[in-house]
Amino acid sequence: MSHDHSHSYTYSDTGKAFVAGIILNLGFVVVEAIAGFYTNSLALLSDAGHNLSDVATLALSLFAVRISRRKPSKTYTYGFHKSTILASLANAVILLVAVGGIGWEAIQRFLHPQPAAGFTISLVAGIGIVVNTASAFLFFRKKDHDLNVKGAYLHLVVDALVSVGVVVAGLIIAYTNLVWIDPLISLLIMGFIVYSTWGLLTESLKLAMDAVPATIDPDAVKRLLEKERGVREASHIHIWAMSTTRNALTAQLVLEPGLSAAAVTSLLKHLKHELAHANIHHATLETGSEDCRHCTEHLHTEAEHDLGRESE
Image (cartoon, rainbow, N blue to C red; front, side, top):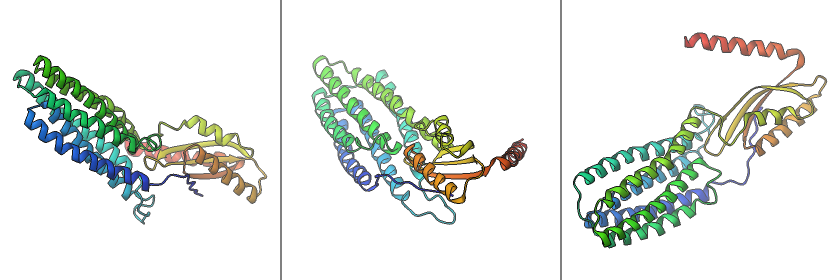
């Protein structure tokens, strides 16, 4: 028996935020890249490359959001919700690959310093602060409800902070002519990217491997199920993410003897409503009586034994 409990979460506003973010950041990438070549600034060029990867990640996230809305099929019976998790994982990998390129170029600039136009660097980076802050604000309201949105929000916030650093670096270069500041800022940008991306990478990888989402406590879910009158025991609880916003659960419930069919139906409906408030949107609950509990456990034990034997 399954149940979907839907709260007031829609994809339309999120999709518009992604589109607006893509347009704003793509325009700034063009400006920043031209300025980077003109001023011979690695800090601007590396930040432009990072912002271009952000455009790619925003586009990939938008694609995942849209494809996740497709209806289930005979092959994909759960639908395409998991595409949002795969997009988050791909975005994290793309950013980490970009880090390698920035680091390599920074090392070359340390070995072979080149002059850069400090005031122009600061001016362009100042524009970046405005663009990235405005883009991040588009995702602020829903950043705590969707790993995809959270990833976009964190990247844009970090970009804004990086732009602040580039402004400072440009002013230092303009007044002191310390050209090694330029590749130093690039290395700091690299550190910021790794720091902000690592959590997204690990969480996306866990969800892709069907780990319990970080926002859900399995023990609390077990207590939620067993506290209801009529439930003697909850076991074989499995919780995983269907997408970056929707979670699923299967569980075996041993019910008190003597419950009528109507009482069992009412109990399951209530439990699934409570699970929805615990951020579990799709629940499959198998029920049985005390008399058949040992039979069920025996079947589970045999299945797990066979699975372990196959993996040897």
